Image 1 (cartoon, helix red, strand yellow):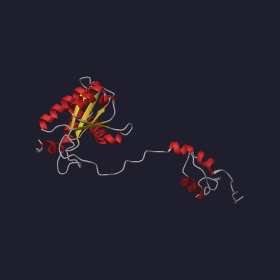
Image 2: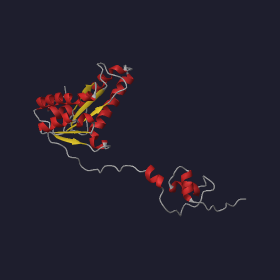
Image 3: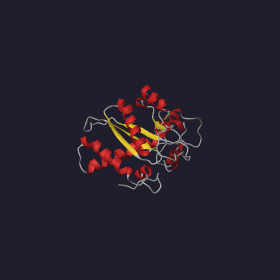
Image 4: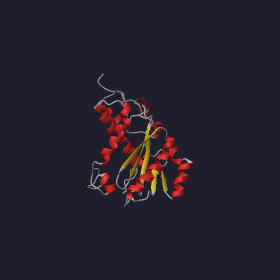
Length: 236
């Protein structure tokens, strides 16, 4: 009684029995006698194929100083959010944002379907160029069909505008637009939930969130709000 028999069993069997637990944790369990009957894990050879495929992950992007434009509209980030579970007032189920990289100023438009992206972009481009006096030079987006259609690409090519398309399944490359849309939704959800506003007013909440963010401090623009950085005027 009292003495434990030495278990001669393949460590890999226990590795699989315990759901592919790492060997460091298994050895700790053996040393503290959390589980009786565990073999010696100090000697093991080979690689677990299940762990190679099941636990592999994408390495993080290298932290390097990103390029930043020196004037408004040199680089615009854009992304479409939706479809939403409920339609907005007016029948819209999507919204699209355009973010100026220089100032982080954001514009939002509401859409019924993604095919409207090209017409909305034309309106946005005409508006911001007239208001700012600068020309839109680069547009960064994912590879969604609304951005890669023949009509959209031909329109940008005719204007001499540079298109920057992210690599497939790499939303990090369009991170500014992705994060902004998430922040907008979180702010809109917080406001509507706290005030118990019906979901049909979601578009109004999204528009309010964008308006507020454009007039709030951001670490991306030193000592200025996005509105001040883009327009050169104090907040109103």
